[in-house]
Image 1 (cartoon, helix red, strand yellow):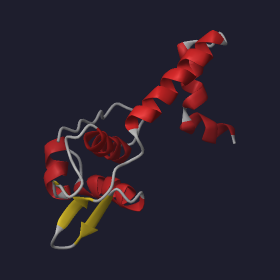
Image 2 (tube, helix red, strand yellow; image 1 turned 30 degrees about the horizontal axis):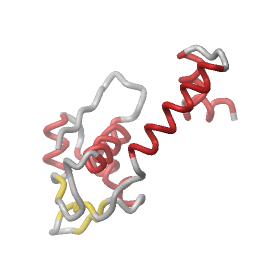
Image 3 (cartoon, one colour; image 1 turned 30 degrees about the vertical axis):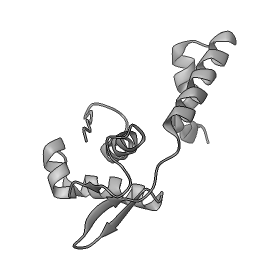
Image 4 (cartoon, one colour; image 1 turned 60 degrees about the vertical axis):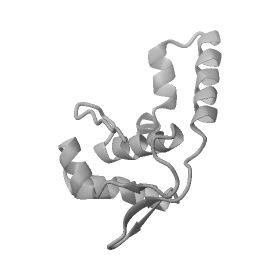
Length: 120
C-alpha cells in the first residue's frame, strides 16, 4: 500500500492519510480482511507523528471502513464509497461548471469545504 502526503498542502496530514487508505482499498491494493500497518510504522514511513496516523485511522474507524483492536492491529472491514462513482460525479460537476463559464479557480472555490465554512 503506497500512501503519500504533501506537507505543503492545505489538507491536513491525517485527511491525506485517510484518503490514501480509502484509495488503496477502492483500487484493490488493500482488501477486506487485510491488516494495515501499525500507526507507528506508517508514521515512520511517511515521516509524520504516529498520532497523526491514529487520527486518520480513527476517522476511517468512525466511517466503518476499518476496525482497530488492541493486540490485533488495524483491519479493513468494509469498502469506502465507490471511488468510480465519485470520480464520475466530479467529472460531471466540472463539465457543467465549465459550460456555465466558471474558471478552474471558481470551480475549486465552489467545492472547497474550508472556503464554505469561512462563508458561514
